Image (tube, rainbow, N blue to C red; front, side):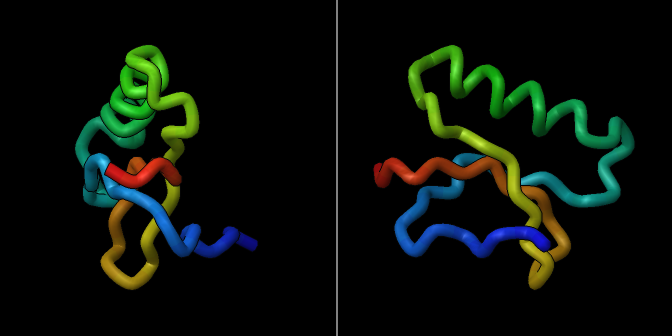
Amino acid sequence: MTPALPTQCTVLERFPVGHPRSSSPLDEYAAAQRAQGTTDARVVMDLATDQFLVITETTK
């Protein structure tokens, strides 16, 4: 079961589930965010919009 989104989070980027390069762009984006200091950047799926989100619990 996928955990719910945290009550306070910032969506850094959105990617469609059917992206031609699969999950590579979102994994690369999340890794780049972590390398730049957003250590809690992670990928979650938003079932309501059928998108993958890169989120952080740090509010911006």
